[in-house]
Structure formats: C-alpha cells, structure tokens
Image 1 (cartoon, helix red, strand yellow):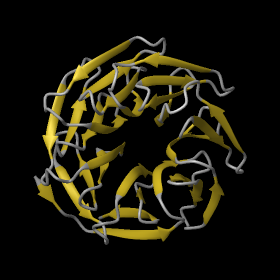
Image 2: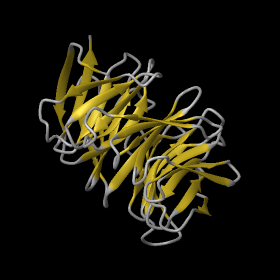
Image 3: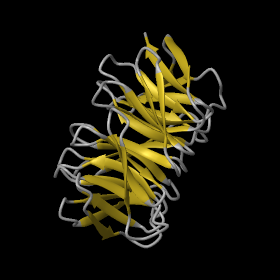
Image 4: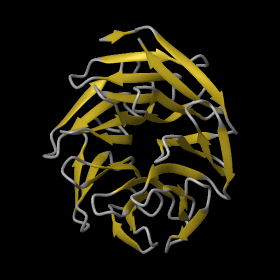
Length: 287
C-alpha cells in the first residue's frame, strides 16, 4: 500500500555534509557533518556550527545532558554550550559508527571496522565486546527489553547484547538485506534493509517480519520512532517514508530527488527532521 497525503517540506541550509541528527536536551536539533563539524539548529532555523577534526558520523543525547558522537578513532562529547571532549578508542582504525545511551547509564557504540561493540561511561572508561568477524555493525539502540540492539550490515543479521555483554544474533530471512538503521518502539525493534529495499521488525523474542518498499531500489538508510509508527529515509530515491505498526507505507518525495537523506529524528510537535547530505536540514510536516 502506498499513499500520499498533503505535506510541507521546509529546508534550512547548513554547512556541507549533514549526516546524523538528534533532538538535544535543549530542544534544538544537533547534527554531525562529514567532514568536520557538529551543528546545532533551532526549530526557528538559527544555525550554529562547531568545527571538529575528523568525520563525525552518528550522534545521540547522553545521560549527562551532553551530546555524544562517533568520529573516526574516537568517541566525542559536546555540551550544549559547545565544549568538546574526545576519547580515543583502544584500536586505531576501529571505525566507530552508531551510538546510543544504554539502560545502564553508559554510551554504547558500534565499531564497524573492528567488528566490536563498545561501551563508554560518561567519565570516559571504555569496554569492548567482540562480534563475529566482518559483521560490520552499524546503528544501535536500546530496546524495550533494556538490552542493546544493533544491525550487522555484512552478517545480514540483527544483534542483541545485554548490558553485561552477552550477545545473540538473529539472521535475516532475506539474503544480502544489509541492515543499517534501527529504532525501538514499545514492543519491538524496527530496522531498514538498504540492500533489499525493505523495512524489518523484530520482537525481543527474535520473531522477524519484513515489509517490502514500493520501490525496492529505494536504499532505506535511517529510521526513527514516531508517535504512530516509524519514519525512515530513502537515500536512493530522495524520499522520506513512514510505516505504521501493521506495515502500511507512505512515501513523501523531497524537493530534490538527489538530496541524499541520511539521519532522521522527530520533535515533540510531530515534525520530522532529516539531514540532507547535499547541505541542508529538512523539516517535514504532514496533513
């Protein structure tokens, strides 16, 4: 099922390369730039840029009221006033990518190149857990069961870890699905399959359901929970999509089909905010 409702898109130009995005503790939008920066955008459109060496990727709100982000061989922290700290990882070239606040008050992150799961306390103490070699872990979130759930892009699976590091993997039914983004709702985890053009759902017990997109070449990338379903980006087609709990899908084309939408988040007023790698943050509201 595909439907289009009335909707409005407003774009806010920012410095080049916005990638990950999250709502901060100050109710502003915080985003990473590839390469070299962390940006802040108010809902009124005021932009502040904080240069950061490297290639910041994913970003999340931490348990300490700061923003935490992954960046080459380190995990970074930025306060809402712009003070930046970096914590080097034990292994150069680890490739940290996804990051989330865990149920234990620490930050959990993935290491794509090292195929590890990392944990860092707000004070900077780092612990690592091994994943299957070559699994290429991507995004990560805390599930409704207070475990960490993450996508294994090259292992074609979804992973689960307890806060103590006990890891379980769940293979996907579709070959070469290449999962990337993942988010949590109250009863399940939802994820995108960039290789298969599908949205997936997995319960805490490991039951998986897949929902094909109308355009199987859409290359869905990131996904976030909304009040009545999940929103996701279609990197390959320049669309923003929505899926309800039963798998009904709506798609909203962005003004520029080559805008390369990546990170996505929602604010309390129901607006959807999308990082467009071509150089702007889009706000989508629907009727």
